Image 1 (cartoon, helix red, strand yellow):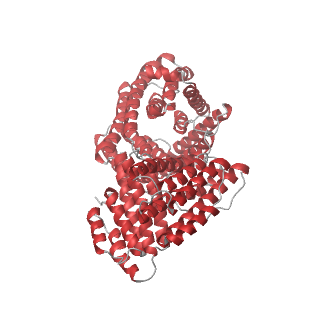
Image 2 (cartoon, rainbow, N blue to C red; image 1 turned 180 degrees about the horizontal axis):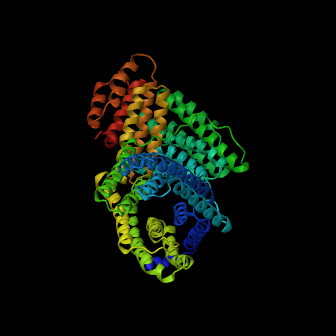
Image 3 (cartoon, rainbow, N blue to C red; image 1 turned 90 degrees about the vertical axis):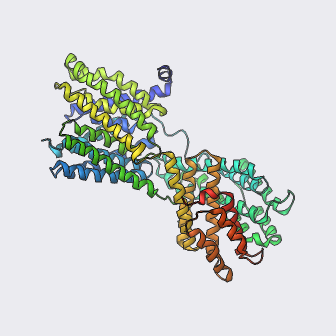
Length: 636
């Protein structure tokens, strides 16, 4: 309670809570005056959208509308069957599909899928077995959403709600400079120091990648440069990998050797970028040429390194041009980071949605209890919303607590307050303090779902502008079933079909191994390039979900292995190609139960026959990665 009153004095949180409450009140009043069937649903739209920065607010509002329309149409089609058992079965399939999409899609597209599932559940659970006009109910649901969206946008405009405080590309120059310095440091630092720097850098790239789309929301120009930014991040990731491979091939060299010139030049480029906002690569190319003449075995890696730095410079210049005059820029046709869906999590999300609705619907049908429809409603709301998240359990617990308090308050409101006040506008006015306190919790990130669930459940159960008398048992039973639905969702997320950050990391690691195997099977062809782009995405996704240096080191090792395997596949002729396919590509294409044993086997075969040959170096690099980070390559 002390923390709550302390937060209440926070002007930012207080202003957000005022906006949320004002938008909700405007929505309910407008929906009531316009004669909407369930005006509190208009307020629910305002709470679900929230009060994000203006650009993100626009996209979230569009997602809310699109999801509501799709869900209303689906709910209407399902409800037309007029058989409750069939309706529950079809709803289970629909919600399962929406949960799978919400888990797979990104950003506001995932939110739209969740809203589509939620809306259909609202329609089916509240109309099945009743005489409610389905078309009217669907249109009212859509109308309430439009009213809620208009209220949110109107309040944002009146309060001069700003855009995101951080531009989408503010940290790019810093990331490039750090990447260039890390690439140089890779050639001289000990492994322990280097692993710390690599982990920090990978975390930075992951944060930039994961937040870019939300920060660019509302600006078509900024969105147009997202692919350029992704390609730049891919270049930085590959730059560090290339210097890792150069170091592995050549070994540790003392400062002052010709290789030290490369490190000095990379540091110099970072300094130029910090000082002048740009850099030239002529001197780097000259240094690479000198090193190639001394170390021919490094020629391909050095050439790729120079090309990578030049590509990074071109992308940086394109982004800087956009920041300077907001003009369009010709973007590259090839995306070097390609999102890859988590098929394991998607499958579980679908199964979870189908199972929860099937079970809650079966309980309702078997019991024959009218309040059982609220069991389906409570379970479906949170199942759909939490399908978007990697670790929903803490938020499900918040929702459970917020829902329980909301139901107790709503029962008291229906049975005691409404009969006492006797007028719907007085009843609505008295709810303002409750809505405001809950909105204040919602504005605080650590308690967001506590406040959101309270407002949503309290609005549904109390129906503050409906003055019809309520039967105590009916109100109490509906409230208990609503909370029981949340508990059912928690049981599935916690025990039956669990979803935690640990499970997500395991899924990502399995996907990484799949992509490595796919790269090996494609043998340097166009599809191998695409699988390498997917691998970059997975490495960044894994980096978002961990702060462990060991796990981040595993991610970098997987990225290095991807490059090694891709290079193996590009060896186009000679006896070495067959050796690589037999002893290298074939090994990675199959599940690996013991990476250390495989590394020993690769070394013992001595496939190169001579240390300077390309295939021998690639096999050596592969065995080193298997030895250094066996965990990421082990098939469980």
